[in-house]
Length: 274
Image (cartoon, rainbow, N blue to C red; front, side, top):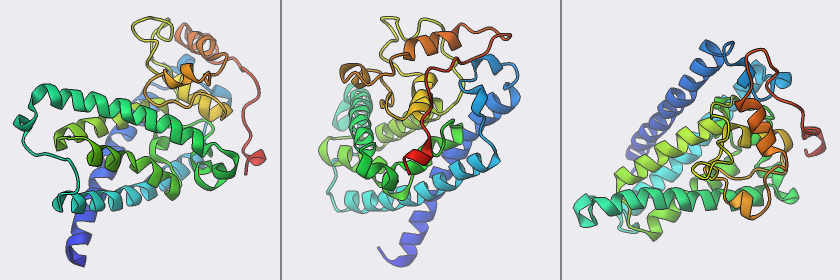
């Protein structure tokens, strides 16, 4: 690949990543924070700690830096696939539609496990301030924080794509659906408002799925709630916040005249960690 081709392909990948971010995170911010914010005030998770303009600009700036890293990984994956190093296949009929669907689900499960354990690693005291602190500057995140990573963390987060593409047959369409799902759930985790109904975290049908409250509490307290999509590893490893269910239910059952969040201990303070 010559320099011109590199720049062209990188520009395309970077543009796609940025447009996806602006559309999904921007739409969530516009709809939930701006248009419906007053109506959903009772669902706002941290009303005493509302982010300011500088917080939001920090999230956007580092997200745009993240896409630079993701773009480089995208170029690497393009070259790897062109040289036959990956297990990406082009024809759905090669493995059939049942496998196509299965591969999307399996990739999500693999990513949830990958995310949980790399996330735990990034909270190791010797690593945290060099890799993960940037993301935790958003102690009360907005949807714009979904990709607000230090470049080193961005490299870790991007690692799921080569991990999957080098180890299992996967169609580009399946990768696309996985990445779309990842973006939606990432934005949901940083939404700042709880939209799921009462009983969601205890129902046998939905207990396994995470909520906005779950990840927001991670940003608030730091040492709990490490999972991404599912509330399974946190259950198994006993890393859920002890008051997670109570905090969720308070938000889920809140009425417009009621406060949305009861303080459940002292929030983490960045100055003690930096």
